[in-house]
Image (cartoon, rainbow, N blue to C red; front, side):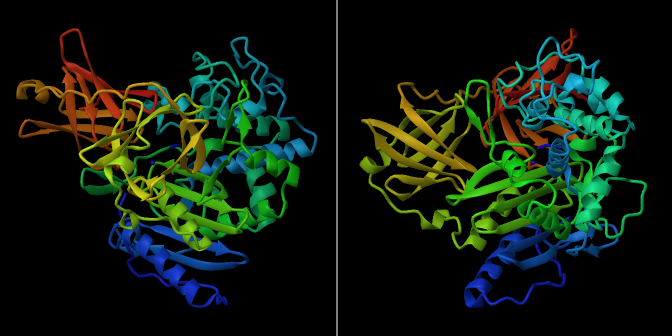
Length: 550
């Protein structure tokens, strides 16, 4: 389902193909192993990882533990809930049905769900596939958090969100949306007169020999299941229960790194859908105004070290997952983790770059520039989405700041090339027609143009008395399994989200706080009797509210 920390190697057999790549390949394997060993450490929840390159599996290994209580080491054969990687299976199922003449992606959803309230809007299957429908995502509706343990049929699940107001006109914006994929699953059932689970099993898993892939179940005995965990403060606990009827066609599937390779190879070789259909899925899409978005149908296009990439990740209670394919290099990386506390997304991209022979730079590669060179590219840059990034300089260091968010130091690799600390995000500056231009690369490359706008002033921190700070202490549930805990220590106040480190928050005024490490704000809500009853997290242009639970 959606969208989201450190682990190292215990001991598991390394299963590798014998391949003729020599010392360079061994160096790559050592570098990959080092990254994963530092990320997924022994005696903690871990991960499985597979790297495929040009016909050979060059890396296949498990890290950490599959079961903490029984001290079971992770093995490459372990089965994980894959979360939103499910969406590419759902999207391909829709494209299979289109090729069979049973539907068209241009069909309006009311052709298959006649009583669905579209609020007078024209919503097509295409809008569901690429997250541009404007339908409210059910995972963002506060009332849904109370139903995480409740089994629901697809129509009961649709009842949760179908009467919510639209977020925007269909096709006007991109906003990641789980509700759209619930509707797609239901359309598959209407068209095939079968369940989504059966359709995926009979038409994808069985033909491809994906023998260790399933529709998720807590009841069924699943061989080699990796158990899911989350963090509670500094300790690990079993992941909160989530009925697998709820993620449904948006995030219900389970699989292994080996089966996901079978899946990727089937897509590459057009075993399930034609080249034309696959191109629609992987090449992004456009909004009503012609602006291009990187999301196609269940897959997102981008770049990794200048090479085209196709990827999707997943996050669900107790698990985080990532798959990256580089078609021009024929490289596939799959990482599945059994904690929602340690996303493999950045690591998968770094490993893909290593396998390609173009590893990302690190800040150890940074060079020294003089003050004139450092300040040359300072300014404000507007990007196609409307976001503004400010490049500023202070005390001999250069920083990047999006909108009014957190400032991050960037490091020069060349006079016109700067990277962020983890090396996977970068700026490449240039002059075009006398104006500064910034190529910003983070998965996909986007161009920002210099504008005349003053960077926002640094936020002013105020001190609140300890008795006021103590009023905020407690736990606030923003989504099922996603809790922010507020604590106070020595007149400092901290926020800790599920699976995240504890971060200090700073008051701008009473009930209004911001974080320095990330671009986010917390606004607390009070009842009529002035008691703190809830909080709203403002981050990335979105709002997520939750009630106090303690």
